[in-house]
Length: 159
Image (tube, rainbow, N blue to C red; front, side, top):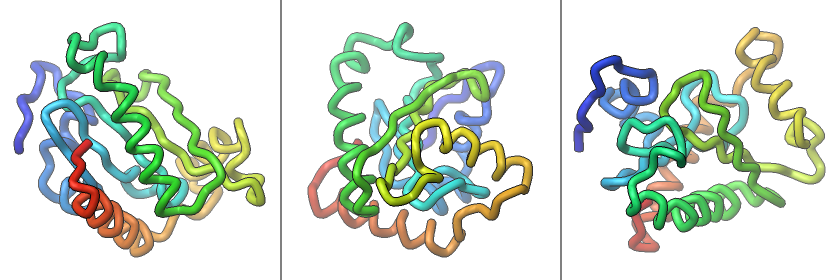
């Protein structure tokens, strides 16, 4: 399903419409949401992004339908991260400045791994961007995306 691009196209909209990005990173898509793995260089395996399908800056711009379905989509996507990674928790973070298109970061938190603790994930994100820390293995990301698609298909759900 191709989405309509806004006049001034943003990076999230471009990824939603890029077939190579869809093939490599997209786990699920419906009329409201796109669930995808963080593109390369990804900070961690299982670091997902839950985007609005429609170009909106955040919940303040949600339609009534988007507003009523948001919590369920976040819950289902978070459960997917937790079920595949085995993490203890899933952080949900959205800032909206890198791309003014709502994309919620869903980040696996492992109690034994200090790199996934609170603000350390922000430090890790910056270190990856500055090439001071190795990114997640692209083959492991591919495996995660395949597993995510299988899980969603098995559950008969589409975020």
